[in-house]
Amino acid sequence: MEWDNIKLLLDQYLTHPDIWWLETLYALLIFLVFVLLRNTVVSLIYFMVHRLAQKSPVMIVDRIIRAYEKPIKNLVLVIGAYVALDYLTFTATLDEFILKLFRSLVIVFLFSGLYRCLNDEVLMRDRLQDHMGMDQLLTGFLTKIFKFIIIALAFLVVVSEWGYDVNGFIAGLGLGGLAIALAAQSALADLIGGAGIIMEKPYAIGDWVQTPSVDGIVEDISFRRTTFRTLSQDLVTVPNATIATEAIKNLSRKEKRLLELRIGVTYNTTAGQLEQCVRRIHAMLRENQGIHQEQIVVNFEKFNDSSLDILVWCYTKEKNLAAYSAVREDVNYRIMAILKEEGVSAAFPSHSIYMEHGAQIGRPEKNEEAL
Image (cartoon, rainbow, N blue to C red; front, side, top):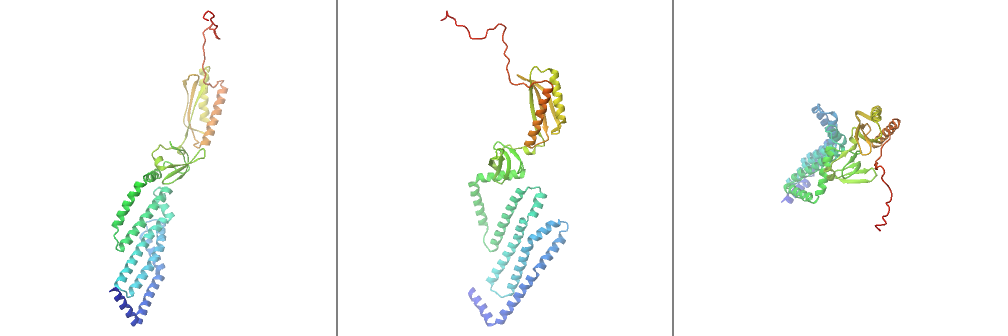
């Protein structure tokens, strides 16, 4: 039946060729008008959007218009082609096919504009990083998720436009996702752990981190694993699911670093000497530029087994390991100088043995009678 309609249409054009040429000429003129006006249409839309969005940041509007510029130009051409083809005489089936194709292309162009917005690094950085405080890694992850959602929605809308039932397809995706989730539980645990690390930000690239699993500098953070460079220059990769369940000590985020010393002096040190050492060490720390002045503790702590112990407890301004070690070394040298000037000796572990007067030391004589 459809073939008969097409044959009748061909016979009409062959019998009246002037009608065919005239319709084709009009259709080409219509399409040419849309081709010439597409830049004007884009400029008009740009102007109208700016007028309607006067309170919005200009940069955002400009980036969105720039993302939609190419899809809108293509959309104008498609509209021109559709109007031109609509002027021609076709069968009902072919007209329906052209209408579905036109609507599908409109859907594709609209979603492609959204996709191009997500590809705009300036727009994503302004919205997600600067205004919402997200880091670069989380922004990239969310951008990929949004892109997948846009592609999936565009596909479903286009498929439904052609009359296909998408409910079964969606159900199939759900079952497939469940099967994948069961088969890749560890990978999903790493992804969830990575998302938690990225959102909570317990550490960043370049931080010195200590956990029960690793001690080193963070070199890379992905959604599955974190890579560390240890102090011995080994490269260690730890799954995020493991790190997410452990206590994380970020040494790079210390505002100050603890310096704790216990100095043992000999028991022949007098109370005056000990008091003078404590006072001078405290004064030395107060004058040291590398020591944080918020809290300095220098006290005669206790009577130890073989020494009188002085407790030195303070914070250094330097957080870096090398700078901290230099400050600690300087403090050690200054304390040694103070002890020497006060005539005080550092103690070392020792035991004193007291013997009774007249006790004989040596090998006991043999008892001949016993032999």
